[in-house]
Length: 309
Length: 248
Ligand SMILES: Cc1cc2nc3c(=O)[nH]c(=O)nc-3n(C[C@H](O)[C@H](O)[C@H](O)COP(=O)(O)OP(=O)(O)OC[C@H]3O[C@@H](n4cnc5c(N)ncnc54)[C@H](O)[C@@H]3O)c2cc1C
Ligand SMILES: Cc1cc2nc3c(=O)[nH]c(=O)nc-3n(C[C@H](O)[C@H](O)[C@H](O)COP(=O)(O)OP(=O)(O)OC[C@H]3O[C@@H](n4cnc5c(N)ncnc54)[C@H](O)[C@@H]3O)c2cc1C
Image (cartoon, rainbow over all chains, first blue to last red; front, side):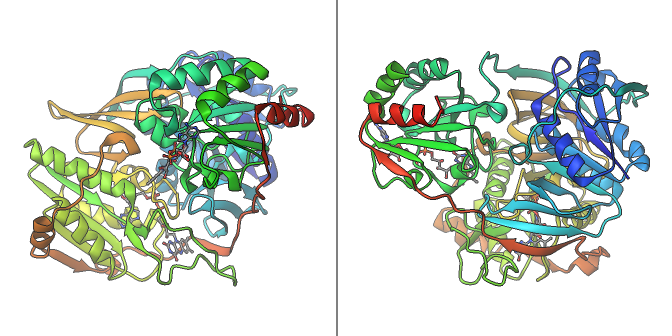
């Protein structure tokens, strides 16, 4: 048996989500190859070769792969799948965008966002915003799977797999990259951060969000998250959103500040190790999942906390 | 141009689902059902494009039970022109939904299909991308802005790390994210008007698509419940407790 894992990267660094996906692929079983498709992504291919348990890295280069355009990735991966029994991808926006196309071309029903593996055809996945866990058995000859990072540990980096350069279809493709606005930040990426401080609608404005959240995050070396309400209101950028339709996180410590705890928000953070909630309403649902709840006005509690840590 | 919008009837997002005690699924008896919130956003986007004069006709399609007709009526009341109900009482997986939609598109020839990025029941996030592959069309998923320009569709996408803009040739598939727009509520006169708009009734068999499930449900269980912890008096106590746990 053999599994192909799609690497998630930005041509310079390999994301942790890839290492976690390799761990899931190990639980599935068989030889594991990692595909690095990019432009000038040699360092990424070298990094992928170090992941424990990897047999070989396939390295494909081309303009259309710089941003891993879905149409190009489909053209590249579908023929490769002749040699594999399964395709595993991190459930990042890259994986979510690309894998269903490949599944459809292979006439396979994809299994999205798995959190557990029970053999080579049976997988666990959350449904209804994590309010139910479904175990499904696939009858398809090949499996196409996306992996929820919070459910698997990252594989180590002591391996030394070989890197094989492969040809990649050059197109033309029917979509073209125009531009990207990536939020530059030295903060830990949310899905791999050990600590996250997350702010809600109660912050009231972008100015207050920044004034209160950034110093606390700096002190704790934390990533910054937000509720949908805070993002919709423009207090924080879209990729800060934690929840059913944002990022799924499970840090060691999650501090929810002025967030009520709607099920869609809980879906994204309730597997955190320790949850702290600061909210002035003692009935707020967030307290039902919090290990430590502080009923207080955030405008005084947060500066105090920043001072104390 | 003509736009096709697939809409799905799902459990209302405010409902807290309960897992059935026999582990066969979640209890959908007597719970409130609504249009998938992302599909409301899709319909809204199509209607706005029509109001701008960029779109002539909006066709909405739903695959589901008889009651999915209500979902179509909601879309018609928001401003869609005509509906197609593809009636089935089976749970149809995204791959089969995509295959049916491929056939519908063959008959309707829209230049743009707008789907939700995910349905909030099954959270699969697949159907639009699968449909794009089956048709060999380009896709702009997780859209927060859609601009029609010189026969191209520019889609700004919400991705990890920020925003990305792609230019798509037409015909194309777009899937909607939360911040694309804020869907309107249908006005009473529009709800009345929608009752007169046509809805065609079909069955998956009419399109020759096999909807047999590829995935079988072994069981559906409750997630582990998280117990509420303790309330702390003040920031000092919080800090002491977190330090004791080694969390900070
Ligand atoms: C399809 C769909 C998808 C969604 N996806 C997501 C998602 O991915 N992520 C997400 O987060 N949400 C999501 N939502 C939205 C979700 O339902 C909630 O609306 C949202 O999480 C609320 O954000 P909030 O907690 O910041 O705001 P609110 O619910 O308004 O809560 C604000 C809280 O702040 C407290 N507060 C007010 N003032 C103070 C103060 N001075 N000091 C301390 N506390 C104070 C209040 O008591 C309240 O509990 C989604 C909704 C839909 C329909
Ligand atoms: C064995 C089995 C049993 C199931 N039982 C149930 C059940 O009892 N009740 C239940 O609600 N679900 C059930 N499901 C799940 C149901 O089949 C899924 O909802 C379906 O697989 C589509 O997934 P999704 O809507 O999450 O797709 P997504 O890819 O997340 O949907 C994205 C978009 O595709 C479009 N779309 C998707 N489905 C339709 C549709 N039917 N009509 C029109 N447009 C659509 C919409 O625009 C939607 O926003 C079951 C699934 C399986 C495998």
